[in-house]
Image 1: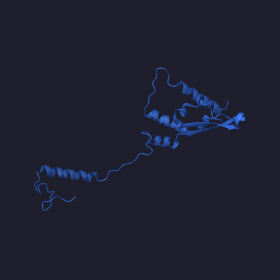
Image 2: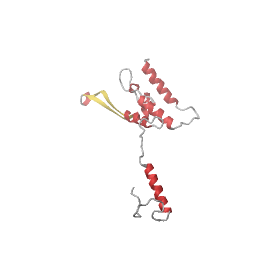
Image 3: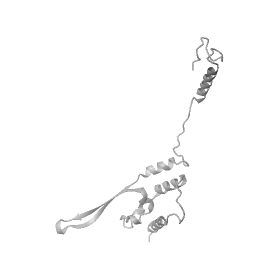
Image 4: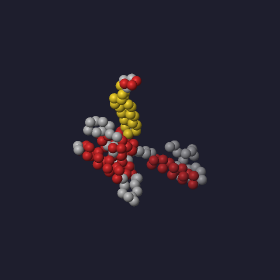
Length: 159
């Protein structure tokens, strides 16, 4: 048995084992990150035998059966017509989920923050000062010049 075949068999056996009896699967941020990493690292070679033929689905590792393969189309090829018509093979089309999307999700994970956007707020100090002045004017009851904030003409100070 080749190393690849042994690895594939081990993955299938682990998949079948699932959580230990009485244990519930815990889905949280760590589980999600582990799952996304496993999906990003899944080896497509695990779907094929030594001759390069697609394995039966039941022999695929669970990571592939649970969403990495999004579509599978199998068509029979025939040769001849009428009584001489016979099947000569199959065309197997496999459509895979986007790996780049999984890498993007890993990067956005709360513990990775590879794409964390930095938002800088400018002008908050000036805004706070203006609000404080407005509050003082309001408390002064609208008395012109009472808090030294109004100009000579009694109007509000320009911002």
